[in-house]
Each structure stands twice: as C-alpha cells, then as structure tokens.
Amino acid sequence: MPRLSVVDPASADPTAKSLLNKVERALGVTPNMMRAMAVSPAVLDAYLSQSGALSKGSLSGVVREQIALVAAVENSCEYCYAAHHVLGDRAGVNADDLAAAGQGKASDDKTQAALRFAKAVIETRGFVSDEDLEEVRAAGYGDGEIGEIVANVALNVFTNYFNSVARTDIDFPVVALPAK
Image 1 (cartoon, one colour):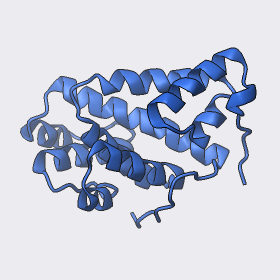
Image 2 (image 1 turned 90 degrees about the vertical axis):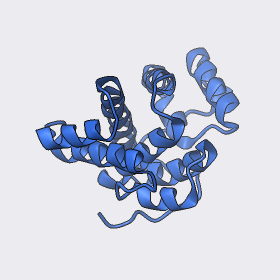
Image 3 (image 1 turned 45 degrees about the horizontal axis):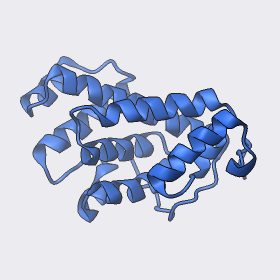
Image 4 (image 1 turned 135 degrees about the vertical axis):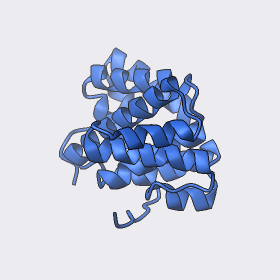
C-alpha cells in the first residue's frame, strides 16, 4: 500500500498539472511515481529536468536504461525495475540485455564496462577504485561520459529511494527482481 499520496492530474494545481501533462505527452501515460512526485511540483520538476538534461548527453538511451536497471537491482526497487523494463524496451534494449542489465551485464563489451562502473559507483557510494576508473576508460569512455554515468546513477538512486519511501503502486508489468 502506498505511503505517499498521488496527485490526480485532472485536479492538480496549475504547476503540477503542467508537468504531468508534459509526462503524459512524452509517455502516453502518467506513471504513479510521477503522480506521487507531483505532490511537490518542485520534486517532479527536479526529476524531469535532470532526466531531460541527461537525455541530451552522449550516453544513448539504451545505455541509460541499462544503468537504471543496475540501480534498481542494487537498491531493490521493484517499481523502477518494472518501469525500466518497459522504458528499456521502448528505447531499444534487446530482451537478453534487459534480462542481464540488472546484474551489470550486457552483450556489448563497452556497455558492460559502463554497467560495471555504475554498479561500482553504487556499491562504493562513489568511492570507486583507480582500477574501476581505469577499466571504464579502457573501454572507451572519456571523462564527460564517466560523469554522465555518475549522473545517471544519481538520478536513478533518487527514483529508487523515492519509490522505496513511497511504496509506489507498480503500474507497469511486474518483473521479479533478480538476486544480487
């Protein structure tokens, strides 16, 4: 049962309504997570702003979705794991990579290096080793892309924690979290 209330887009205050309409236009639906965030339009705006900014970066949508799956598993967020299976599929992540991403694995070696690095960032709370950094660099990621991996981790940790606190009702097809 949810622990935070959600906003009905039809009766939302003007700021929340505008943000929720933007979500509806982009996704075709208004997910429960965003309806819960809209209780404070500042929270929803912060999420949408960071997500929007990162979508303009150099990491592909496929890699960003795979990073989201790593974070969901590492933080035991069932809501995000289910959501990013749907969003990952829409972004073009193949079925095998959707299944493997939560474990930090990918069919592409360069992507797998990014996922291992994202997992290390979460596990060490940012205190990655020199070896972790060298491995992601050796796979072909420059400092800007490494910064984007960290930023995507931060965005997903935020949504993982938000949904854990809220106990957001999952409004995507449920996908069982794999064991860590």
